[in-house]
Length: 206
Ligand SMILES: [Zn+2]
Image (cartoon, rainbow, N blue to C red; front, side, top):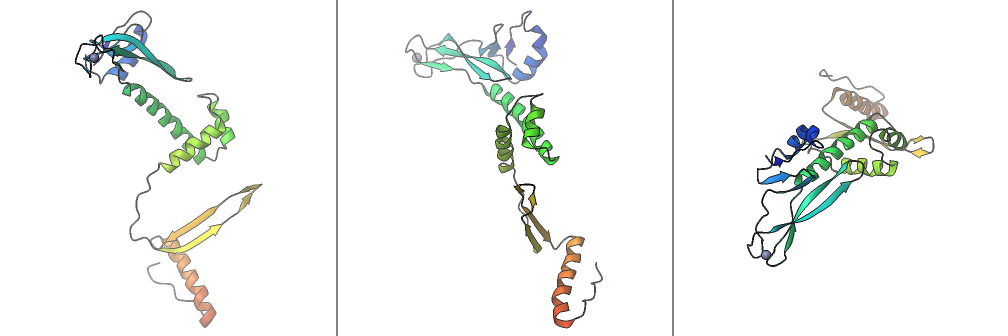
């Protein structure tokens, strides 16, 4: 794993830092001043000369923290480059993945966007519009498995109103569940009743 230059300031975070940098080789170092870079600067991708350290760039995520990523400069051709920061992107991704999961659960329990924003004010403050957009994005990314041999026997579309809000309800019933078989019988009944004025016999498998 990457070397950790610990001191009295960061020693208490040693376990956390180990978890974050555990997958890096010993070619990397997290310095006592919090810079992530190579133990030895890499060679220049342009001319092959050993590069020098050249400060760092700071990446911030509001409310979460920041990270310093080491920069290098070639003494021969002045080419500059920066160390990779996939660990930072992964930390961000993991965090917002959990946040998105919290939104989905709250939505499942019918919490309003304003309510979600009020609750998030205690954890990681987010406006209701941001929450709405994050939730909508997560729904769009949901992979729905393909359905094979799907036969719809009942289709119902309703546009009920709840207060001043227009809602939409779509009901699809396929032919594989017991309940839909009951509905199918009642549909048959309606059709046949009109023609023959007699209810159909219930099929034995229902
Ligand atoms: Zn160079």
